[in-house]
Image 1 (cartoon, rainbow, N blue to C red):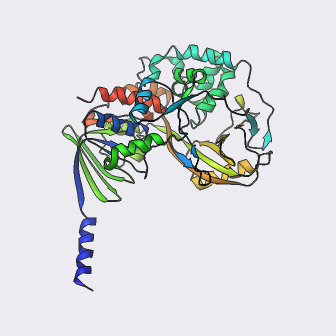
Image 2: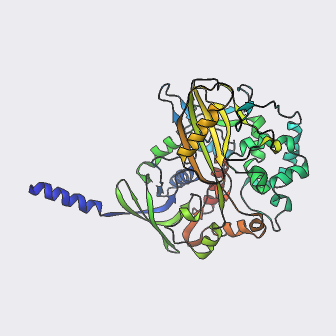
Image 3: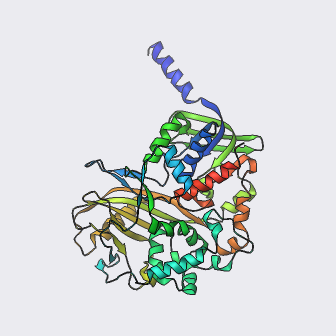
Length: 445
């Protein structure tokens, strides 16, 4: 062997074992909606940041499939955005053009099929849907604090702790349930969920947007948000990263992780944690007993979003409807709905289940369910399927009544750690941006 080759191998080994140490004002764990918003907000305040993300791309639940045939973007899980001032300002900051879209204004009529049997179902939405949604809105206005977080009063109102099915019965909201179910996809058994979680995901802002319109990215590619944010963040975004340890104290925080460029250690003044705070996600963290006890109470569901390719008759929305089930809501796991993408022979699919199942098994079930529909879907294959897990973190009604969310929010600032993300509010990007801004307004000095 040559001396040059030996030296080259030695240097490579030395670099591979080296840990790069950097310092930042803030380290942000999670490059989804809340994490990226935090990073842009803090940079605009003159703070130095590092975003540590496990995936090879920013965006979290906002994922876009680009059809290789037409180059058309197809949004998978995040389709619309609520319109609030924080969202408007954020889109303007990223120089993203938006338009207003009223759901249903440009769609073919929805058809209903029992995916268990493949048969078409004779069902039409109740003419009382509108009045039921008005009655639902009358309940929402009782709890304005749900629009900004989990700042629940003590005692927690009993209605918020009811199973949603019991809440529906109590206020005769049945005709509105299918509409709510379509928005609250990925929530497991909707009628069994504590009502507080349903009122948050389908709140006043969502209800008003059904008539006033949602905001959508004009290009049709919602991932444009994160592509432009990635350009701004540049080398401050550490993708494909696996966290090895997180150490926190009143003096600051230290995060060690491995990535494409080897080992990195970030020393920062503060940590912003935006990933779902399930214990399985936090094994590398120096959790306190209080954190471990609180995060250990969370349960979750699983949500899949994807696109199927076909050569048959799938040019209209198709909802899953079980005639034997209350409100036609089928027991999971299974498909929620199919919806046209606007691209020939490509249809979006949403699928939910209560616990994790590998994507290859979910994909096989999706194909089998679609091919079993009595409408000639033709040959069906998966173009893309994305996993959203863990999704919709919830706790039991007794825990909510006993002050779980007060205790959770009391963690803010402990050991220089701040929390945001859907577990601290709801699965809604615009709402999370607003929540995160309010949080950081009180942190940044």
